[in-house]
Length: 463
Ligand code: SF4
Image 1 (cartoon, rainbow, N blue to C red):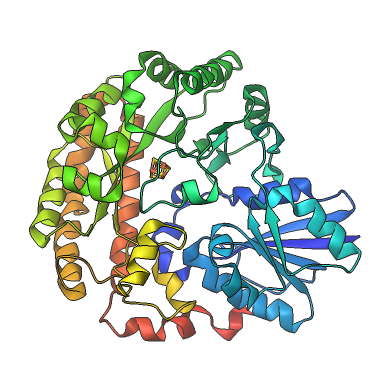
Image 2: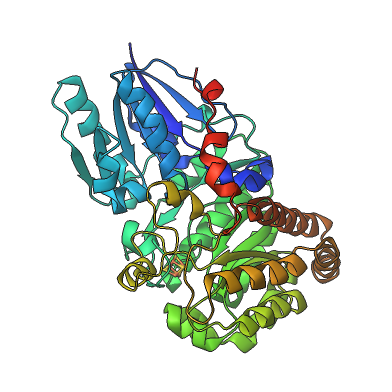
């Protein structure tokens, strides 16, 4: 039997987030690739979120990676190439930076790899592999059920994707470039069956927007949630949705009935100028003054809001960032994901920052590791790189202070009257705080970073 080894590489700079099972999610793409691999292949997933890397024999080794863990993928690929084992890489970073990836991998699959995986396997078996493959976007009913049985048993969450694509074009986001602007919805029954095949204590619908962008897509969400209710699914769950989710009471009620505890909503900024800069159209239509009443509406259904916020947009001054931190603390948002504006390959932000030579750390591929949301990698628009570090230390220090997190917990408990929801949001804030504080020691100009690669990949890890 031939063996396929699929590797989920780790970014060791994300220690704070990787420490906890609650803040890690299984590599769904690898589970889908496994599902599409013929039965006469043995398949194993080596997941560095939990497993220490050790060399394993295989006929073919596949990697997936976001930008932040691409460097680690390249490093591990080097070990396999040296051993004469064929390596292949897919995923968003390989798609956007395929020429770079080809320097480290034998084969790169661009786009949605599952649509061409059968061809990669066939060509490998026939000794006829090409350097690159390009996967056209699959119709939603062709997206297969992932092999959840291969994921590490320590994951608290099972992940399910029910839709792909987004018609909006926010400047900092890769979704429309990678998954396209058409919103593709998987058949409800297939999704429900897939949920039943999972065993995680908790569920995460990884869709970028569970409710979609039309009345019809909202109808599909209602069908899905009704199906969950009818099948007696009651695991606590979490998802991502656009801010107008608060408009549909039927959806909110069904979310509450099926035990939804938290929804990630892209807020980005409380400043209209910043929403215009990033092309965040929907939030502009909703209006920043309505954010708090929207959060409160979700609370009335016992659901917490995890708001995502970007720091250091080009229109942000240092005082704007201080004001953003204060706004978040005083607002009714329950949990907050704070990131520094990061120019990920494939985004308009990346093209702009490259054109203006404003990426401070551009020793790629090593510096891709720094692109993990919480590290300042840019020359911002209205302050120096160093001033931004100082203001982030000050503002995030206050936002993730134990007292602030406890106050947020109290607010969530009071508003939702749901202890479990309050706990979800508190653990989320603590996890982000850990990530930021533990990652802080790598901030430039602290020279520790320069010694990190050696510390991260000691020889003893590579048996
Ligand atoms: S941030 Fe959200 S709304 Fe904007 S393009 Fe990305 S997925 Fe779509």
